[in-house]
Length: 185
Image 1 (cartoon, rainbow, N blue to C red):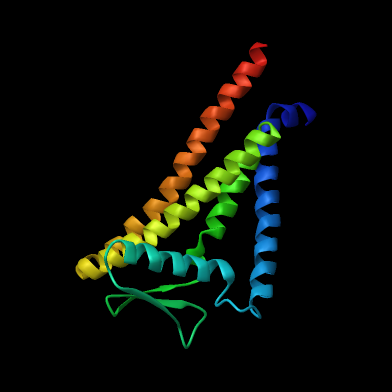
Image 2 (cartoon, helix red, strand yellow):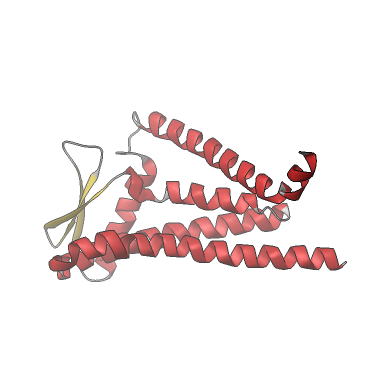
């Protein structure tokens, strides 16, 4: 049994670190959301911030944009040129995706500074990609309403999950190189 554990040690270590960190971060995020219910930001600070930043980027591209509190649910309504196009909900703030990304990176932990900097830089890139996907979706739906379903079900997830996947591949390749370099010494 012990030899079996030793044989699959790295796989088990990956699974335990990934699931453990994902569980801990998810609990902390749930706590944050419950605390946010009584804050000045609606539905929560990060979702509100993402909505404001999406509005600003849409306006940067020359469109009129406005966000408004949804009267019946915890979301913000996004308008482009006075046309209601989308709801920005808590799931649109990229925090859950950043938690997933971080848990994976921690599972391939390298030196603390390198790992921390990569997680920080990756989280920033994911956050920016998330803003851009909301902007692309909103402008895309405004300009091409006949492609709403395609934009929301294919393009929208492809942007954010594609970004995460590329960052993961980069990290694993970088991490694998470090492992080989350390063994060669």
